[in-house]
Image 1 (tube, rainbow, N blue to C red):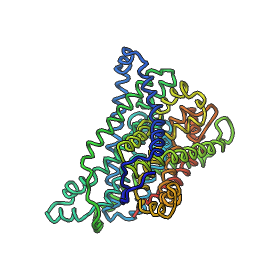
Image 2 (image 1 turned 120 degrees about the vertical axis):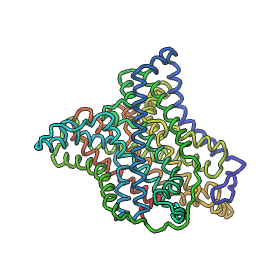
Image 3 (image 1 turned 45 degrees about the horizontal axis):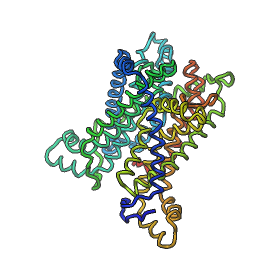
Image 4 (image 1 turned 180 degrees about the vertical axis):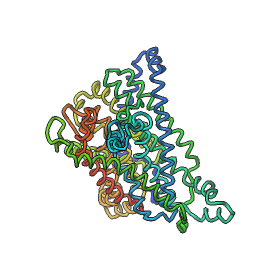
Length: 531
C-alpha cells in the first residue's frame, strides 16, 4: 500500500494502491451495471412506440403530479424545518433539548405507516369521523389524493431540513449578527442578510434529501391513491406494461438528475463562517407561547396521530391472532436477517471505496465514489425493476433469491456506509498508522490495529443507518423478495391491500421500535448535539 502523506485531512498520493483501486472499481461496477441494463431494456422499445408512450396525456399527467408533489412538500418542509431549527438553537424556547429530540423523531416513522394511520384516522368512516359523528359531522375533507400525500410526506421528511439547518446554525458565528444589529438592522433584516446566506447550503442539502425522498417514495402515493411516478411504475409492471414501466423509470431518473443539478445551483457558494461565540439566546417575549404551540402542533400531528391510531388498534384487539393475515414471528426474523446481512455487506463493500477516497484522493477514486451514489439517487421501485430485468436475463441462479434482494439493498444504501466511513477515515491522523509501520507493522496490520479501531464509531454508525433504512425499504422488497418470503414491511403492505388495517399494528410497532434503537445508535456514534 502506498505511503500516506502526513496531513491532517488525509492527503493524497501520486501512486494509487492497485488492490484498493481494483476493489473500489469492482464495487462501483456492481452498482452501475444493473442500472445500465434498464437503459438497454428501454432502447429495445421502438422509437415510435416510445414517443407515443412518453407523450401520451396520462404520462404528462404523472410527470406534472410528481413535480407538484415534490415542489409542495419541499416548500412545506422548509417552512417547518427552518423555523423549528431556529427556535431550538437561537431562541430561549422553553425545553429546547426536549423539542430538539421530539421534532426529530418523525424521521423514525416510515411514511407508509404514517399514511396508513392518517387514512385510518381521517379517511371515510375513519376514527375522527366516528368521533365527530355525535356532533352532526357526517364527513371530513378528502384525505386521498394530493392533499393527503403532501401532508404525510411533509410530516415525515421535514426533519431532513431541520437537522441540517440546525447543524449550520449551531456552527455559525453570531458575532456577524451582532455586527448587523449595531448597524441598525432589525432582527428580520439581520436574519435575511446574515443568517440566510450562512445556512443556505444546509437548507439546500436538507431540501435535496427531502425532494429525493418524495420523488422515490412509493408507499404514500399508493396509499393516498395519487398517481406519482413510483405508483404508476409499480402498477404498470404489475399489469405487464413492461415498456411503459421502463420508460417511466428513465423519466424518473432524469427528473432525479434535474433535482440534483438544481440543488447545486441553489446552494451557491458553500463557504460559511464558523467558530466564534454562540451568543445569548434571543428572547421570544410574547412569541414564546405561540412558538411552543407551533412545536407542539408539529409533534402532535406527526407523532401522536400515528401512535394513537396504532395504540387504538392494539387496545381494541383488532390484530387477530389467527388466520392467513395473522402476524408471525418469522416476519420480524426475516426483516432483521436481511437488514443485518445488508449492513454487513454494505460496510465491507464500502471500506475500500471510502479508504481510497479519503487517503488516496484522485479523479479515479472520485469517479468510483460518485458511481456508488447512483443507487441511492435512483428510487427503490426503479432499482427493483432494473434488477428484475437484469436478474431474469443474466443472473438467473440468484433471481428470486435472498442474494438478489440483499444485493439490491446494498446498491440502494451503500452510500450511507461510505459517507460515514469516509468521514471517519478523514478524522484519523495519517501519522498514527505510519508510526505503527515504523514499529514493524505491515500495512494491513497497521490498518487492523490502528486505523480500524479509530474508525469503529463511524463504521457502526453507518452500519446502523443501513440497517435502519433496509428494515423500512418497501418497493424493492415487494419487487424482489423470493416467493413465500415475508417481512415486516410486506406484512404491513398486505394488510393494507386487503383492508385489514388492524393486522398491521404488531409489525408496525416492531418496526418503530427497531428504527428507534437504530436511530439511538446513530445519535450515539455520530455525536448528534441536542444542546
